[in-house]
Length: 130
Image 1 (tube, one colour):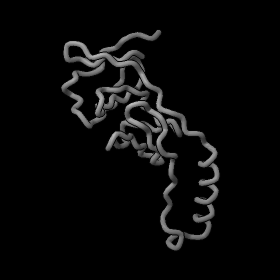
Image 2 (cartoon, one colour):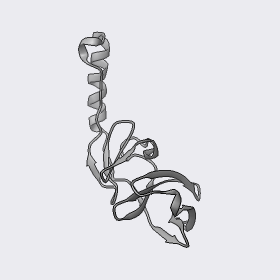
Image 3 (cartoon, one colour):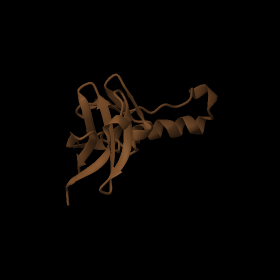
């Protein structure tokens, strides 16, 4: 059943920062961007890694797992996931082949927008509707 949950004191989320919290059994990412506080499900739209262990800079969220990039205001995908491998000359040929095959699989996995949640701020407290 969806309802409003108290998440955090607003002063605990400074401008330009993000924080993962759990409210009502849901993992939520709170982001304090240029236009205020936003809340998203704390999972990447690519392979469900926690966004709270990624980065938030210049209005975008970046996933720590495959570097997918999302708009911090809307949750929209801004950049596709990336697969970074060490230089081929430093790897055995079978690993180079494995990375090539993994890249083909990764390219087929769709990257979805982050799921937003409504946010309210009252009496210095952030509440999220989940």
